[in-house]
Image (cartoon, rainbow, N blue to C red; front, top):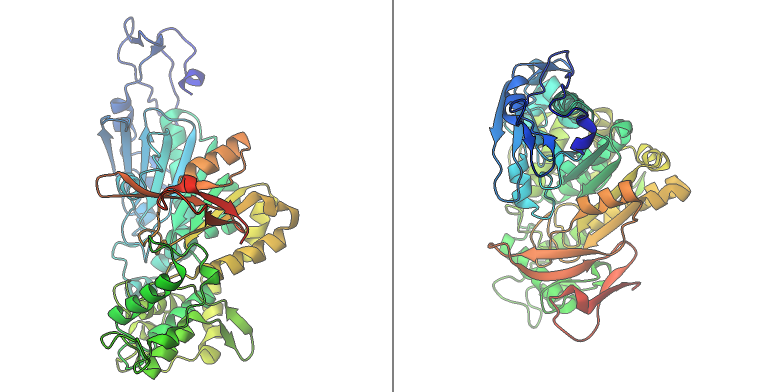
Length: 515
């Protein structure tokens, strides 16, 4: 890609955005790479030159040159602290081997810190943005604590977290890239999961022109219903009706024993009909240590079932079996649901656990709270507009959605339901999206199944070469980076089916086919 920047034998100046000069060569007569006969660029000096410069009203507060290490090229790390006088911190990473692409990564939880390129590359070893020559950008979502009470009390943080930080970040990054390389990115991609998946759908609906392809993982596409579902569980925290973490895990293991393979992976979670009534205390075979009381059994059953209201009908499609006790304990559902409710409404009473005086989670009733919560989430920009996401598809842009089949936080069943609604709205343009349920995978990462797939590579091939993604590969790595399990990653409605012979931990012994 550098060929387009160099037309002389010894030098070529890049005039950067903002009007300052920043093309630096290592010298004149001998400043060429003998293997390619192209002038060498002094990226270290280029990196220093943009420190303190302003782009889109945001000042670069620090630049740092990172030298090449193994397969990771040298790159310039650009930081903007407190963008435009807010608590929004932004990072842009500019690799020496730039391929005219930008990837924008979303955050997670209630943000609070930047998911740096180093962190994300460690979490997703198949992504390799810098090795592929992609510039990278991410932000802290507009706050530095990840505390929903702080976000709820600060109007700017609230708006940034809901949606505004996404646009500010990508526009700043594109301006920096144009300055550094002398041209804007030809292709821009978004990747994110959990709250980053919410960010991804927000990007599709609010600023679709900024992206060519979006990868959204582990988000429901409907914050009103998922927040209601979280609070419906969280309202039982601290009561005798809430199973312990050990009881939730034992229930999931029983479902896996009936529906899963020898690796503990349920290949078709929608078809698992394990009845938790067999775990009630007093039933023959139920473990004395983890058996469920009648009230606890009802909680487990209602956690899996759809949710309806008297005025709206079914609002939530229910859940597949998962280990509902492994996300920092059963109180986590009230924490995350209450956090989003507090940010949307500005009422921090939602943050108090159900067994605390004054908590709005106590005696939570979906018939009373759902409509108001959904409206508040929509009005603050936190929630999704499915029709706008469908319009993103009809414009020809690409979308890959994915979620773990054993996600205990965000329902894969409800994510799929909302994705199907988008495809119906998009009509023939539904060909521009694909949906993957990763068998046995927990929330974003972890679980019994392999949790790594190269969605970014698939998206690049789709956008730039027209190669429509089909069956992909899921891989589980051990702590040393060795692959210990693979499975096919099948696009909906296909499912992975074992051939009946060969290693069950090897994808080649499976096929993707209809159930």
